[in-house]
Length: 289
Image 1 (cartoon, rainbow, N blue to C red):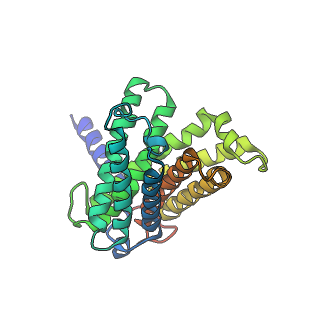
Image 2 (spheres, helix red, strand yellow; image 1 turned 180 degrees about the vertical axis):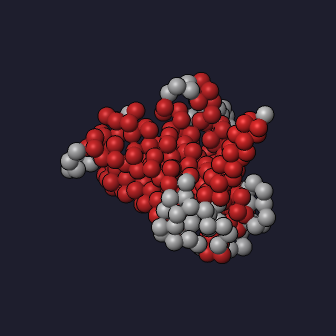
Image 3 (tube, rainbow, N blue to C red; image 1 turned 90 degrees about the vertical axis):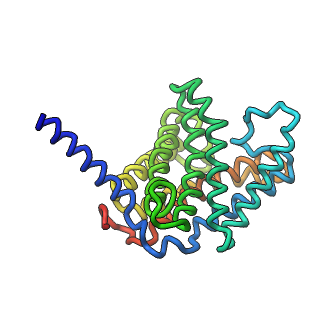
């Protein structure tokens, strides 16, 4: 009985320590300010909304929705586009930022539940289904982090310190799906690497390892601000190197805009979570509060 009690106590202590690691710096006043990640997330959502209104379809990862063949398809297209546009603008306005970030969080959560969870249930052994959910989860984590930083500080799950901690945990869970895909689909990933870069498979493995390392760094509070910022920068560079050239070459193509903006949204989601670490140093180690 004592051994079981000791084991249970050790597990509880470990969970509490990890919770403190994930919450490091979450109470800092700087977290509530307008950060670069928040601005980027807002701008990308505005661009996604404008893209939806211009092309009259869902962007990339939104495409395979359950209502795709129903008469109301166009209505949902434009409603989604207007919501993306409105939340993007709202996040930039101090008076509406909290409500807009909350609405964007719900929007991303619904899309993840409607598009990606059924695929996971149908083919749980296929890494690509987890990747799809993970990519949207990064966007959700960013919107949630913005909302939590602006909402009541005493929230138990969604807002305040707890909300920021949970948004970071969501990012920690999402990043391995991205990192592992670079190994499971190494040839496909290497094919996206620009031809002028040498060692294309090496870059695929390196960037995959970067996402996995970031997840561990955030979970154990090992230089978490630096790790989150580097991850966001890496995703942004990938977006520019992989998806910007096709967009410049085919500016009138809906798919080119979808790929570029969805990749940008993932990078911006990671950047918004990185904003939540602005109250600590770049090389902070372990829980500080």
